[in-house]
Picture (cartoon, rainbow over the protein chains, first blue to last red):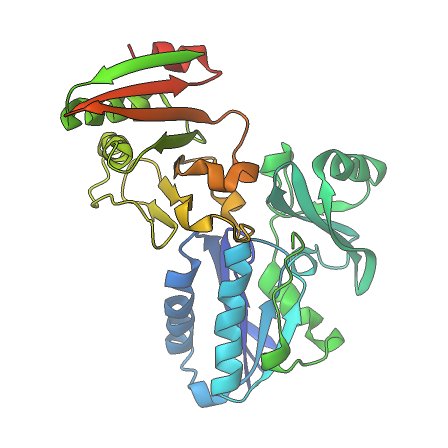
Length: 193
Length: 148
């Protein structure tokens, strides 16, 4: 059984495929505003490379936000379409949680612009701080108060170096802790509403 | 600070646009005001040309935003006209002032809450025939001096 993994919740484009819960390959690169153009071709390339037939796809795991307004909608739209068209299972993961650094306590960050960040703090399968939007000065204070935590994500906007996420692998690892979701009820998480 | 230019032709307006692109640091936001036909789009075309964008630039009145990637820097062109009196929380804040690009906004008054305080405002007034008065306001005096 093949799992398709999709994340375009920030400026990144990440696509992965797994067979029997073993990640075959994932690709991830910066593709601001081009995620909608590249996501399907990248998925096709991986499917051809590993000789995956679409009938073999049994589940889709998607990052549901928070993140870029358009970005989160791209992966979710594609994931829902696959899930409905091929009648597969669908799982949705927090985009922040997908950035965590394995089992380390992780402060996961995405730029929310206007001096704010999306932040979620995770350790292993536990949630230490629920996903929320936070002023950057409060984020910096949180980081300073937790020097032993790993800072994850593209945090150059904060003037600090964050750990590059291994989001596709994290999403696959998190699957066991998730309930599958009806594709028609999945909505993007956008905390600025 | 304010600087006033008088343009006597579309070509002169284009040339001013080219100069604007040359002096504007990445992340700059321009707000263009002026009546229909004043020459806002002509000015944007000048900016696009200076960035070596080959695509034809037209105001995105229907699609609200167009991004040109085929130049030296991305040009983000927003026409907020259709956003009058509607919910403007459609993610435009992720584009306006994008770090590596140049943003141009027509009808900025319809998305006032999204305009950064350091935006460069440009007003074009039709003086008749082909003559236009172009007033540029910016906090950045070196940018205005660069236009000489």
